[in-house]
Length: 194
Image (cartoon, rainbow, N blue to C red; front, side, top):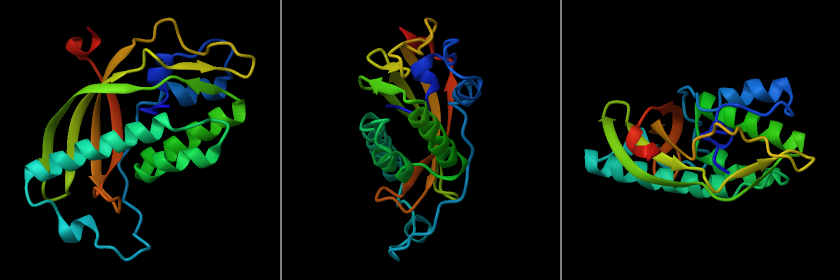
């Protein structure tokens, strides 16, 4: 499953079969906010203490982080909340809180997700050495993803584009790559849509 968030699955719209509460939650699925990373309980060095030696190193960490995030979202099974942990480990702040709420709502509603999200055109935009944050754009392909309600009916909008571009901000965190997703927004990119 790919919670960039759930809006790519559903096209920013949910069928009338879904509850209004889930509609509101899912429509804003692409919006996340920045937040401070949680302290590392293991005592490992924080990213601020180590930092990235170069912009290239930061960009490589961003790509590794997004690859891990994509794998974690594809591993989510909505009937097994323990499978959500990989997503939570790779997100921070309000974006992490949003992922927790979205996945919990989908689990409570008895929805299922099948298929895998793929991505291409991973492009680095900027690196801020002071905050150790990285901004990237990604083309996300959800053409293989189906979301069903408890009765087995699709909740995916007929208007959902199969390929969508997103701008993602990653911030320092106690993850092995020292980055986690802090914000994601859908952007217009005609090349991604083709």
